Image 1 (cartoon, helix red, strand yellow):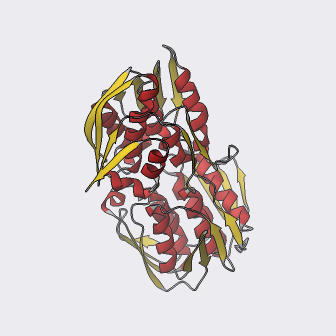
Image 2 (cartoon, rainbow, N blue to C red):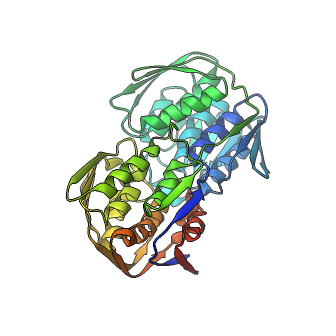
Length: 407
């Protein structure tokens, strides 16, 4: 699908989609619990569909309801195949979880996911009863996960740690996770622990050490998924007259910082704003979209992990906004955007990356507040938004955006 956008200033309020990160954690805990759980949520994201499909493969019954989804735990088969779409979170969460439940697991995904790293996770579970025939997707896991002391690097993916945290309480014995080095995206681990507490499973954290006792997941019967700060960031980046309802300012989602960051970006007047994005990597394209037409310079540091997302997101953000006239540069671990008074039309590719599509659209709208956009923005592969925020263009249009679609 190709999206053709004519520049317009956006105004108004839309409701936040449900957080896919929150739904994924709730869904897995629901599958591990003692009885059904109803999840109140409104997401149609492909990453959410992926987790529910995998839970069905693991023996759960997943039923749609008018206001969400009900997960009914079931008996896990002896052998399972999990297809995770393009969701890094689903694949990394369920690799240890499925290995705790059954002794023969195949994990695969779309080509984009096959490029993403699993080496550290495969190495860790390999020291605890599970062997794999590869450290990249697709791989087959044999053997069951065992309790004990787990040592894992903290600078690759918090999703490895979250997956282990959800799996270890089911093993029948105590375990400890000792994280070596700095933990990146630590807020997402806090989200995991918070979700587990809703299901009666508590983890003790002392510095970089997590102590996990054997526990039974107890369903809360019903839980409401939070609004998604990560997706909302790309609507908020469209301009200062836009707001998103249904977001919790006290959420454990670290991406809630977007409101303060955008406020700082819009106040710039010839000065430099430096943002450490080590804990908020998904916000980088949204910040860059707003910064493209700001009154100063924005530098985002500790951004190297963006090179192993759905695309090399530092490069694709740079090339996409650069094609629209932005003054933007990137190196191995940072991005710098110097605001310019106008942007212009371009034909750009999504690179299969949902956040690149949304960032381009946001930059087109944002510049109309402070300057001008000349021409039309044409985005090929715009269906990439379905991964996380399929209603993005519907919301964009509701706020006054001018979008038409070409097949």
